[in-house]
Length: 464
Ligand code: UD1
Ligand code: CA
Image (cartoon, rainbow, N blue to C red; front, top):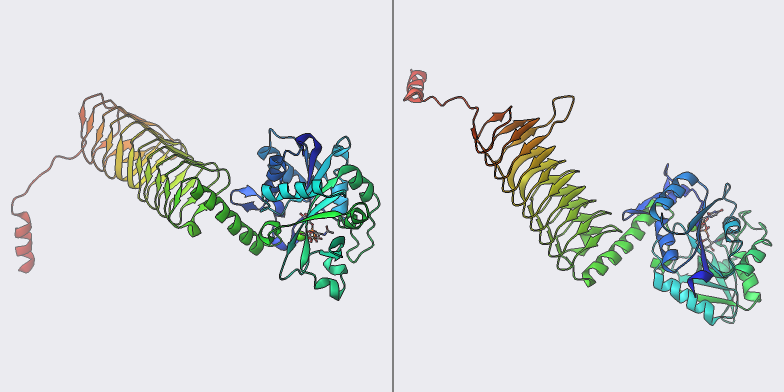
């Protein structure tokens, strides 16, 4: 199947009433991508050109999401204003495909787990057959609700919808997955003849199966139910996500990433992880993360849209959001890196350290209990326990700049805007309110007073 001969239609028009949601079903998220992203991706993987998405309910939102995700791909959109059935939906795509004379792959926007290999098998079955259509089927112990594949002498005769099926037909366990590869000339010709004479008063795409059976036969590929199952409600969404999650996790393990407890590891689509990285239990890595090689991600850490350099260790229960962490860093446990955090090589951030819009250069450390916001921190800086950048005056945010080699004593407040010059020392407990020149010492504490024997005298007085 050469890529120029394949187009795809992805049906995304339905509301998905059983989701009980304000949001159209196909935009519900599955491991960091909307449901409809999956079939569209599969179609492009097979070389489909174009892919036509049939949108209807919340058409603008679905179109927007797919346009953004597939900006550089040949994707087209048609609106099916009323959902009059699957045949009607596919027919809406005839316009953009008028000049396409090869094969059309038909996919559902709410069936996320199809594998490219299975679709390749469908293409092979099509080529091996003599008829104008090949379809995926599955065997289900409980086929309730699905269209049943009716065979005669082993050959597909037609598909009958559950609501139209006889008691005998309802006992058939082989169901129509709703995924077809079909010759375009046959498709448009037969769709124009489909009638809505059935229990639901809809135009059934399945009506074209009987025609194909009479014109050379229908090729079938039996696919795992896990792959062909769609999403109708949120319980099914979770079930589909569980399958996809284990598939992603297994793929990373095969690529040389250790998952200490894959059952509780959540890795979204669109993540990169280097080899020899070790991921602890209950770690979540959301879409847009790039994790290097030889990284350790400790138990319970959550990473979103962040980059982690080679050899860095993120200790348990740290949270990273839009952060860029260089190689050889040590983060956490219990660190919180908020958007705009950039750490160069070998930076250490310990427990209960929070950073936001802050750059920290090579080898600097803030090991305990600090807030560093809107700061530019040089190399080789030591930030003592309990140091706070007072970056907010109630109206505006202000920057703090610490030069290379600065030493900040514990419990320092840096009242921004403020600059501490390279090599300067800030004594513990200081409130820095004005710029400090390089190599200076700054201290703002009250001088210590000692009253010898004071406590003993007080106790003696209390006893009397
Ligand atoms: C369909 C098949 C059934 C098959 C089942 C597999 C038909 C008539 N029946 O039934 O044989 O076993 O899928 O899941 O095709 N859609 C539109 N516009 C419409 C109608 C549907 O875009 O007018 C979209 C839906 O949003 C959904 C997909 O097509 O993504 C399937 O529609 P649905 O109504 O769920 O079909 P089923 O009744 O499940
Ligand atoms: Ca369905």
